[in-house]
Image: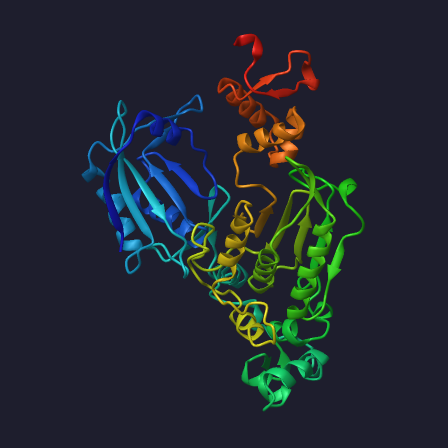
Length: 468
């Protein structure tokens, strides 16, 4: 049922932040003239997408600035609240609070919508999904659109699709299944066992069956069953062709072995990378457990209906692991460490049966990945879901603040400039690093070298001796 959180009073700073918000995939701002039924449509779109928030009672002024114009009383918003109650009855996906601020009129209705496990319909029986900063209808008579939404939400899984024109011998007679059966299921024959696990349907391999037991699933599922690994000699936000170190590698083979080979390959590449730290250039090191768990998750939980391979990009100061498809079901970047939802339940379950299974600690993999980074003093991985792909960033960035890293570097080298500080901290913004230097100068931690100007500007430890 709808959760009503009551009245919330905010100060002028919070008011300014709300009025400065930009509409996005996760946020909408609406005037109070929005009809209750249309509010329900927007809320449904968020629930069928990645979740989000709506502020009802914020106008867009003619000059482009936003203005606060809420409901005169809480009761005046009863129509909007009632529609949300009726639309989301039987679940607790939606919360509502009435926000009041000094110096501006009325109550703005703040609606928080969580990502739904199932497909949610409007009161009229229509389905919408949030795409970028707009709601898009899902035409229920167009099976492709409805099937796509079911795949996105994990209601249906592409792993269960049988492969047309592929004989069962591709997996029943493979070297992979022979080795697996000898060690994991010695009391059965491949054909019977694979059929019992629904990895064969009408004697045709399913997508999951091919991924797990075909010796070369890439021949059956091209452009969606390999792992691409690229090495960029750069710390830039995006890698460019001229920064590539050698030719990108393609890791193929059956899924479980592919995971093992990819982790080993990334480890070998990382060992050749170096990053600037206070004591000088040092070899980049990431916990093997972190690499293993993140790559395993990218392979097991990706959306195999999307014809794109998993991408792993190794930079001088980070690793990016990109998995096609959004997070499934009700999982979001905020609850991913606490919630479990397997888009590809068979892949997860059967992979766990392999000797030295890649996912033997079911449900604890990402927790392990995060903890191992903290154990060696690196920041936790960052997870990004842009609606089309999930990217995990594993940064070689110390838990220490920028200021601490700069002071440690100055202890060893005596001076630092903006470029070196950004290389040291992994910060991409020159202006942000300038502001860090300014804060440190205000605190008398460093001072600017008076003999150098412009691009040659450097900073020295301690307060400016001329100001003492």
